[in-house]
Image (cartoon, rainbow, N blue to C red; front, top):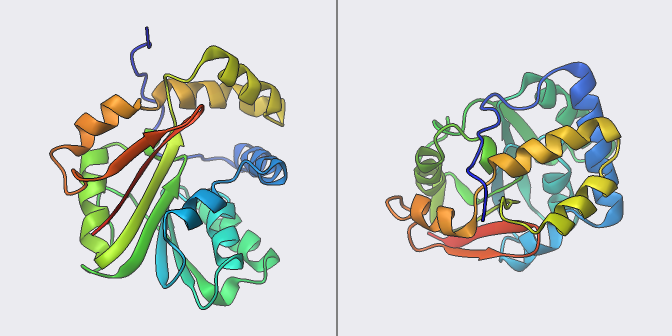
Amino acid sequence: MTKPRIPETDHGIQGEVTVAQYDQMQRGFLKKGWMETQALLDSGIKEGHALEIGHGPGYLGLEWLKHTQNTTLTGFDISPDMHELVKRNAKEYALTERTQYRLGNCDHLPFDDNSFDAVFTNGSLHEWENPQAAFNEIWRVLKPGGRYFISDLRRDMKFLMLGFLWLGCRPTAMRPGLVTSVEAAYTPQELRKLTAPTKLKNSKISGNLVGVTITGQK
């Protein structure tokens, strides 16, 4: 039986030390091939101007830019500390000219209707204070024909899979945060109910051993 969801945070990852440790963890995931880059590309998001919500250190968006041509990215995150870190990482990737980053809450995106060719996010859904409002905002800022890709951990993953992720999580100081993130995540069934009254009601919701993905097109 899946345990009840325990909300984690609605203010993102804050603090210089924690942000640095999170960056180290994400770099490790990237080296292990655990980044969602290929799944993002396979969803059909390969061109245009994309919005990445909850970018964190920014590696998914930066890898997406690296694997596509003539694309640009706007990153959006609630954490001022991540906002500063991601700009440094974009410079390291030599992608500053193709990126811009904004601060704010995804419940109210500060962008005009029909602004983006794509919207994607990984690992931030479980932190959203009002996911249904965010789903509608994603739909609003997408251009007609634009695609979206929303992925996160799943709370109902098998205990052995959680153990595998836990052991692979470095630095070890990030392990408690991994557990609380899983506890705050949604199951595929919950996401079907959550999206039903929103503009994303016709999304494809799929899961694998560790995560869940919401994809679709406006």
